[in-house]
Length: 88
Image (cartoon, rainbow, N blue to C red; front, top):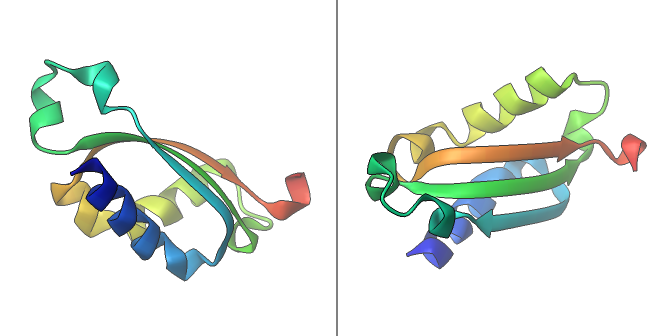
């Protein structure tokens, strides 16, 4: 199930034209947590030119908006590290 969720997250984030994207399933860290039953826990690292000149909060808002449907069903928690290529 987690591979399917990771695939769906990558598909949704493709609109941001990421230069690099890594998604780690952190579900094993939340075994027994009530919310873990309804959706997965993921760690996201993404580099995109879409983030140029954006604050971290606006990058996170963009990602949450992009993943809004999955956040209702397949994602319970998401840790985000969003980077602009300018910062590398």
